[in-house]
View (cartoon, rainbow, N blue to C red):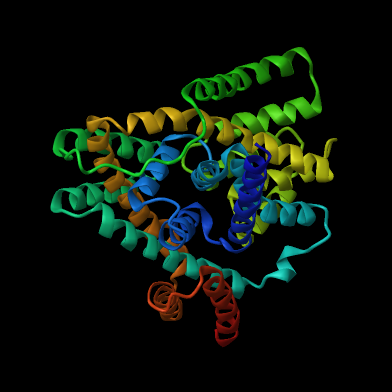
Length: 402
């Protein structure tokens, strides 16, 4: 038993180190993060198959909260249980959270630490990362005309209607289309994730999620308290956000600025800094918590904001995974997942254009730099972190030529 526990601790530590490196180098937003994860855990480490990864991404797209962080939590859970889930989240989240808390405290000045040219280079490398993910997933998951058609329709719909609900609706409709259009053979199975959460435990986690979502506002009414009000606001925001990190920013502004917790100038400064750091955009909550005009603030406020906004993601992914894994054994469910997987590729393709391409490729220099980064990733097989650093330096150098 002692050896088993030691092995689990060792595995959790190795998971933390892997995700810490990703947390230090994963620029480009949630869509790019999914590309980094695919390269690291599907292509390089082979922790799971392409199909299982796409299934996992599809589940996290259904759930509210930061999809890339939830994928990371699920990967850590499958590798080293609950400790692995916590280790994956901590490794991926802490670098940007610490940087943003330091920025909020005035210890660092983000504007002088990272030039606009270098920041633009990081946006350009996201184009290559997402393009590589789209190409790799399309080759495995869109293998015939029907699946390519589902992919194309999904991409077009999401490009025309940018709301988060449109993305969820596209995935749901694609599941129905898969149920009607595809008849997978019994041999066309999938690789089961070694999930250590049972269905009873999953039900407990889901019950806790809803209990906090309903109970925290009631408790805040009965026992008015600044810390409790902050936890309730951040937890509710993290529970009800569909569409990823960018969607959470206006919702947080509505919570913290009108209430006087954070002034609008500080909010906008933090928003700019959040775009310049790697890792999940939800770590913006750490900046806001550290910037509170009322106690708690500083490091304690930043930690409270961070934990409160990510808590729903943990509870939802731990609660949903056991039922999702069981559902995937169904022949009908696998038919639906064929359609869902094709739609996920379509969503990534749409994101490659808007916002990744449109915000990064502004001239011929940008296109050339993105092309070099794509070749470096796909054919030269350079590690993603090295390509990220190289593009940041290249963007900084190219800014002088303009």
